[in-house]
Image (cartoon, rainbow, N blue to C red; front, side, top):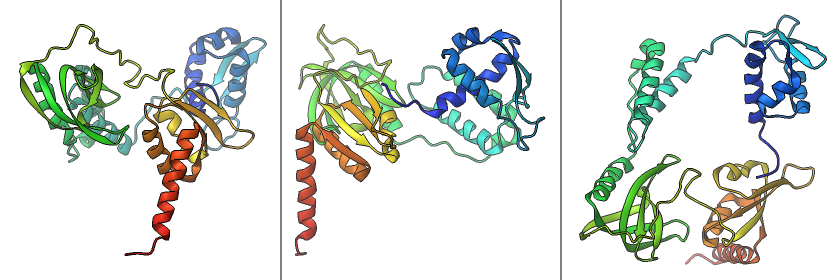
Length: 321
């Protein structure tokens, strides 16, 4: 993806830069830039910004100060940024609750690491960690346990499944292969006899299922997918959608895989291109976003949205029965 980079990238770099420079007084600017993964020009711009950062009051003793001697830089005053991070009560409690929830999530492979981190934070939080907060998992956790047990049972399944991309519910027979967690969601990977291919089924979209007497027997061609980069893998044969996106809908570039992002002139509008599995899914998504997003293409998607918008207007103009 190309286009504007979020300011949070620079903020994170600046927060790391001060302790990095404190540990390396007199380091070459070029060497520091290489370590930080930025150009020397960008690093010098970051240093200029650090010069006006510091504690409230913003006097000479409050701001970060440094000596930039030719090609070498040394932090001479850190304005307290080397002090240990302290969480507020609300922040500590939120972190404890989040870790408790994560520790109870089925399929989490690093439970021991989570529990060690939780123990350290609870110890540091003291009495706050004993606050009467109940962690309750979603109802889908029970369904996940039943699906996992069925998969481990080694039988084929007959299930009713909701496909959000086409907004339809189908019945199909599958040969389960495994249950995986991707981006906080549980999926059952299986050979689908209906389409004769490996598919990833979201557990929360399995409406009902029943174990069959026959064993699960995926064919040799059924190979587990690599899900390290996510479940959806855009390919060149999928429809390409082009949008003009306003400021308040830019979140879609973070939530969905996109192919390209670029500014549309001097304003705040972005031009976004993305692959979608189904134009019907794209139609429902974009109608829900309202006037902050304009569809540029493909023509078929434009025709779908115009037709649905016209039908909606007809409903409003028709007299009530």
